[in-house]
Length: 365
Image (cartoon, rainbow, N blue to C red; front, side, top):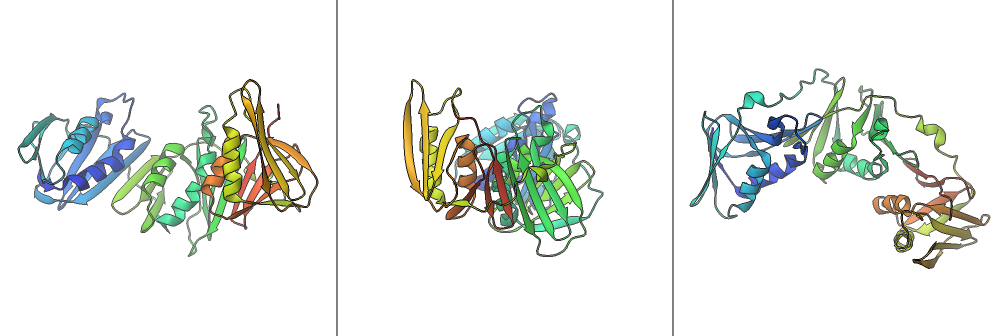
């Protein structure tokens, strides 16, 4: 194979796929990336067998072929080449690749394409197409609630439910729950429910843009996201997602209406004085007033009052500040309606009929 291309473009697609490279590869080939020329395109693929990412750009082709190369070395080489000069790449049948840029010549030894895992074939052609921003926005307001506890593997991903005219994403770690449900622009015959792993969700959040579309195809135990110039293929998490609907409280009559940025900043400041032994920050809520405080032995204390709109009974409750900060950072609303039924009841944030976030309280020490 032989082609010429621009450094910036080549580096861009290698960086798109690099997070799928196995960091603890049991097979040497999984530390490599696959380069394939297809007409006037170069496609680069990486996989760790749980997730695979491929991306392509246009090139000046001279001859077609394929080779796999050590991913880290290849990326480091491309990074260090001059920006202004064209790159010439060639690979021979002995699996030695030559990278030339001006007076610079690198030779790097690879492995044949035959050893690289073959991408899955999606027999189920039933698909759904969404605007990329639409899906990215849904991911951003749910994915932070995914569990990091590997022993609760069914919670180590986001539940996707696609049915009729709606798509729903759900994430929980057992202490908080984020649910977003949106109507689709057109009805679909697709009827799917699948748990998509955290790593795949993180990569999607990174790769999805403000423009363009993404096509989603499901197979028995895998899912494909087609972003046009980039494909993401992932295994699904097997198991039954918990019945999350039963933990969503009914809408409260009295709500604390608070300015989002003020609430976020106060929670951040209070969190400075937390430690592993004393995590919870305290919220005292009374008529048109919210006081956020933290008192940590041998460290110090902080107290801040916010103007709010509230007519209900006085409540004093503790929360993990991270669980408040993360939701406030990701939702897009000037004012928040924060529902608190009692001292030992969960806090709830709703955005219309589309989004609900439930967070359990913590004991105040």
